[in-house]
Every structure is written in structure tokens, then in C-alpha cells.
Image (cartoon, rainbow, N blue to C red; front, top):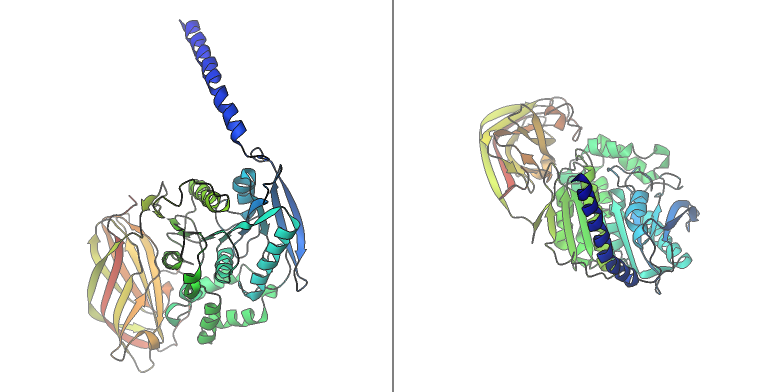
Length: 495
């Protein structure tokens, strides 16, 4: 009996192979001329001299075989702040890894490079300024004039710092055929100095990614001012010059926006605002990757990278793969599993809480308000904290609000933060609002929500290093009438 079973299995395999041969042959003859086998490509590392004499280190990937008549479709990939073409803040998201694993083996030429003042490239850092934009333009010229590239079908992917430059190029009219800005900003004021209060901890952390001697002179001075909360109007004007949100309505390039659910540097609103404004084909993915505290699950990377390639396949190769016909918004659960798809941005409902009581607030003190236990909810939108503030003789220059959840497991989960200059955020009667970041957070059932108010985010926890600037010693205020408006999904996608 065992021998008969083996024989039967072998016979079945022979028959299966016999039936498969015609299909394999047909597939072979349907392949386009010059199609290369997977992983069949060349990679060249070199340096390209910019118009100001600075050398930029690049890697160029080209598929093997004969290129299409118009040239290879191509993708340029840009890295994040303090990274290089060979490294990344996010799990497996380095530009060279993406080019080698997902693009070059599938018939794409790819260009990666160390941004100015990064890695093996020279020059000074000016935060996606005119010089960095010129670098990208000159590198695209180098790419198309020195290689068999289809200049009408070039796409761009950029993460974090690189994503900011992709948006800059898009509003500046670069002729990209498709773009994918990822885990980045569209409004740098909103990200780093919302309501005129600097998120000094975020600014300082980012500043450590670039050696101080590689900063441009303006950037060096503005960084010093930002960390000390000096010259804030000039800082906000500079951040506005690096932002693109007001111009995004002019973008008609097919755009796939990818953003993290819980990214304390660049929240979900940065992508949602872009998705609402850009014209033409567009797609939005909100997942579990990004800056701290995003978990960056490896399984998600493969899922998102394949979707990203499908987007490029559709708009760089013209493949009718249907990605532009599917529901255009995806929201991944936390912990990550296959995302939930939506035909439009998910609708939220707003939970409202009011807290009685009046409390004095000193320069180093805090005021805490806590709700009753709530059911399982998932935030989606910017929480807003309202407060009636009466300043003492010395005033109270700014106010920070931290929203957290006290879970049944005994942990305190930071949901979002916000801060405001009280001179601009409160009316004459002392009533003011603080808008918090949109961190899409799953809050377990049985949790209690907590609002902590003070001069710095560290009054909630010494580990909460977002708002670090104190108010002057002797500052006092009285707080009352605290409210919380919390947008949540009508139906959570996370368990």
C-alpha cells in the first residue's frame, strides 16, 4: 500500500507537469522583448557634480536586456533625514533595498542618492530648500541624458525628509508621471510649531541627525532660536517656505500618499490634507510605519511596497492592474494586519467631555482631568482641548495639553499632544483651544481618558519629550472649564 501511494503521487505530478507545459510556453511568448529574469540588473555607484560644484553620491540600477523603444520607466527614491541611500529610519525601507528588491528586477531603472550634506555627498543642509530642489532637477537631467530612460515615465518615492522634497518637486512642476510621498509633511509649521509653540523636543531630536558643521548659516541660527523659543515668527516663516499644502491643489500627478497612524513627528493630518487637495488619480494608505512610536512591522513593508509598485506599474508602465479602481483609502489596524479599505476618508463621530473644577497652575505644575471608563474606541482626527485660563500677574506664556489613556492593564498610553501660545490662542475672556496631533490610536475598552495641562509635555511624564520650553519662574494661572472633543471612528478597525 505505501508503494502504491508513492507511485500514484509520482504519476499525478508527471500529469500535472504535462498539463502545465503549454501554459508556461504561452507565458514565455507573451513576455515583452528584452524582459529580464527576476534580479537580473546592474548597479553602478558614482558621483555627480552639481552646478555649484558639490558632488552628490548616487546609485543607478538598470534592468538587464534590451530596453523598450522609449527607454526604461524609472523611479527616483529619496531617503529620510540623517539617512543615506543605504539606510532608513523605517524597517527595510532604504532606497537601495527597495530598488534592488522591488523595482530593478521588474523592469524599472532606479536612481538613489545621498542627499546634500548626507552620507557620501558634500554641501550644506538647508532643509529641502531651493538648492536641494535644484539637486533633484540636475540629477533627473543626468539620469535621462546618460541612460536609456523614458523621460515621460519617471516616478518618485520619498520617505520623511525625502518625501518633503517629492512634494516640493510636484508643486514646482517637475514632470513626474507618478509620486509616492511617505511618512512626511505637507505643512511643516503644523508639524513643528503649531499654534505658535515650538515642539522643541522633536526639533532637537531631528537636529542631531545632521552634523552641526553641515548646516547652512540660516538653518544653524534658526535651530538655536527654535530650541530656545526665540524669534518664533521668523521660524514659522521659514517652516512655511518648506511647506507645500497651500499649493497642493495644483498637483495632478497620480499620487499615492503613505503615512503612519502613530507618528509623533508627522501625524496623519499631514497626509489626509494632501489627499483631500491633490487632483487626478490618488490613493491614501495609513499604516503602522513611520517615526517614533510607530512599530514598523516587517510584514507591512512587503504589503505596502507591493502596492507602491502596483501604483508605478499602472502609471509608469500603463498596466491595467486595477489599483486605481479599488477603494482608494486604506487604514491598517494596530497591531498590523491586512488593511480595511474605504471608498472615501472614514467618517468620524465626536465624543465630548466636560470637566468641572478650578485649579491653580504654577510654572512647573500641572492640572489633570480624567474621564470615566470608555468603550473600545479608535481615534481619527485632531482632539481639541478647551480651557478657561486666567493668568496671574506674571502671565502664563503658553500652555501644553497631553491626552493619554489609562488602560485596564495599568499602563498610560499617550494618545496625542498639543500646545499653544496663550497670547494668540485665547480670546479676551481667556477662553482658548489647543488642537492636538492626529495620532490614530486604538484605545482598549475599560480605559479612562486623561488630559494633562502644564507648561511642558514632561509634566505628564518625564519621558514625554515633545514640548520642552518652560514658562518663566513665577508664572501662574487659574484653569477651569476644561473640555475635550475627541473624534473617533464610527467602527474601529483595530481589535
